[in-house]
Length: 429
Image 1: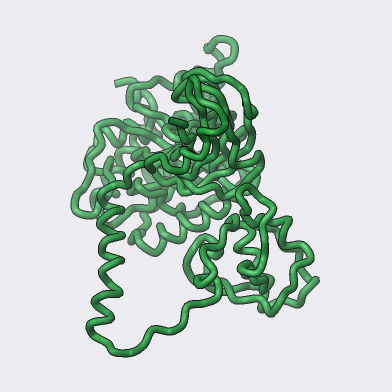
Image 2: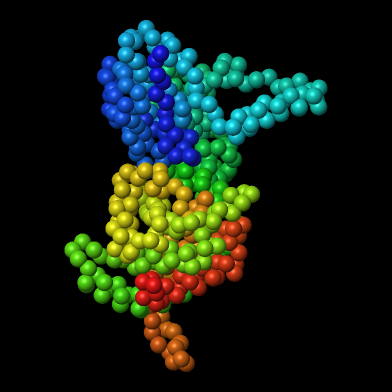
């Protein structure tokens, strides 16, 4: 029986992706493990491998198609001895079983109309045209543009795979008054207010959100709405760290150049070991206490940011942390990270000091419970033993999830972090 090749879920949060490229065509023979396609998520480009051997009987999703839902059939593989006549059986192949939590949610949703009918004798409103004529197959981008421009998708025929409506189909379509974007959903993840209403048409350039910016808007809005943030700020003197950094770089071999951020990553990891109650995540009905210090480092990309993770940072020396941080940052900018390299983690560091920023606060990146915002190191007056002196001082601010980290606990972490930063020899103990 033909084997359906499905759009894979490349991460636990992935709902849809872009089929960037096919490495095979109809009629090609493939073996298990062969790379057959490239899928773009909001943060990375991943290769898809064949799990069975056979012949590509049909490609259902064309290259460049955006918004392909997870578990949609993207191609059909014919097994040995099968020909094109067997393709009619492909749609009959069983779909993957949904998780129990999703099943329960659907069952609960199905029961809600029944309860409503029992309580009310009111007649239901007539179904909209789109519901009476069946489901509308359209890409998320086409749906958003149609909603903004007042285009009725139910009256259109799509040119995409299996009649799917894509962006190109909207050109020249009749338009009515644009609708306001909904307060929820992917079309307006960051705000229920349509900013276009406040500006004259032609006074701005409209740049559609790409997948990464949509995800950033949705996740950070969710973070600020659902996580009770509070902030703790402390100053750290860097004189000894800067001296140690210079000596280590002078003595290091070819290709090794430690940055201040490398020291901060190790200091944060060791501080989490010293104060393990701060190395946690909130899980609704439990606190997850992590056994390793997995430190995320914020990396700026064109049009967004990503936080690749240095796993087990407490067990790694400065040179290893430096090399891994550079490798992760380079692959992040090229969108070559694997999901396990940027998802999860137990703590994050965001450093804007190189841009001259003295102080800022970061937004917690779920499922983590804290992020450290690092400002610029600069010469400031300090008082030592009753005397006014000059020192290199850096301000850091820790954003904490109050559900998992209380004020005193966050303060203990910063105290430990400061001790490692100001006396870097302690990192060797």
